[in-house]
Length: 561
Image 1 (tube, rainbow, N blue to C red):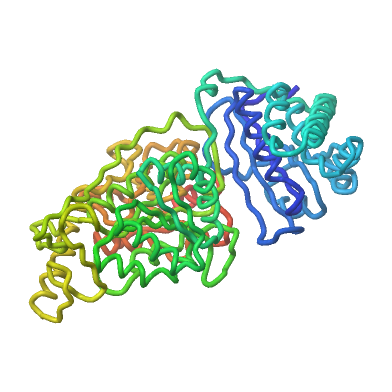
Image 2: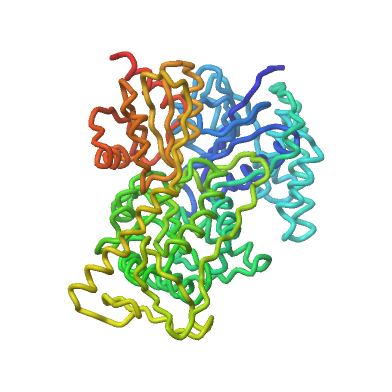
């Protein structure tokens, strides 16, 4: 028996073989067996075939980030081992059918398909695999049975019973292999919930008062759209699949104009079509919340992979000059909290607010504590007969009315307009309106979020991250244990508070960690604070960073100090 704090299991097989089913069920079995789990996946852009994999870190302590290490590799199709060999070492155990694993020195043969056929169909092989892994890790057999039944609850009784039987048979096989991994149980896990990034964004939208969502499906943001569709009936949410991205964005603007709180969810290529709508929102000062799940471009790029290359896109989207706010959640919890916050900020300042995630964050999940309540702040006013939609105010924020609420007429127009919303070409009015809209930035900056700082005050090296790299960098620095290094993480990437400059001025060396080819956030910091002496750790191959990769990259840069 091998005793350890953690085991990293990787499953690999073709699209259509049910790898995600194994991941979803096994993660819940692990949780119900009082163990921590972190899961993430990578997959090719195809419906059938190819080779996909999912990684599950299972531990007696909290785990939140992606790693390269593979302790146990479960192979379900040909080519998986060669594709993942760079993650393996001499201790990696390879488990699978003989034809797939026979050439590996540290292999164990399990014929998943043959076992499944004993229950009437090879399709039950994924339930067999789930059971085998549960048996190897000595997970709760009751949790296995319960989660298999729940996952297949919408199937016939015959199918449910066959999957349960196949999983239990797999469990017995797993127990008999002599590979048992002993992991200490954690009672506190019972009080936690398993949550993905995509569901966190969906729940955050609802917590923020969202009652309308429109989208044209595009990976990876489609997961948020489908999660909201599942929640719609219980939360009074109207969900609309639009005919295209342009319509989706304009529908959400119209919803806000009518008094709803709307979200449009998309990805980079879809958002490119929405830029005119963003500019419209800027001119008519109607709020809009945009969730953008990043993936590698340009064009179609790598549609199922991950990247952080759309920061510039949302920063400069829309012609003309108008305020905006950009959030970039660094964790599942922040995906919830910042999405909820986005609705209040959009409502208060009557601006576009962006929630910038990526495939890695949306498709990863781990255990979290109860999510906090977020108060819904509403700023709609009841209009009177003399209502001026674009009243010039000291802070630039005009009273926002909605049609039918009060006696006033709520005029909006995409042309430049006066305080009442009438079209104008007056130079004086134009200048006053531009300045009114831009005056909002002063208050927006004052209410912007501070970055998170970790480390001693007398640091020499400052590692800077934003968005989904947060927890990977966090664990990498904890592993290094170098007290000279501090970590500064940004979950609001625009606008930046002026006080932030002090963090950069104190550092002897600054290292930005980003998942793009040019260091978009580093360049934004340089533009804002004239910080020009820094190094970049960049990755843009479509795959997420791992803890090991970040640790190595930082160590290499410290060697030249």
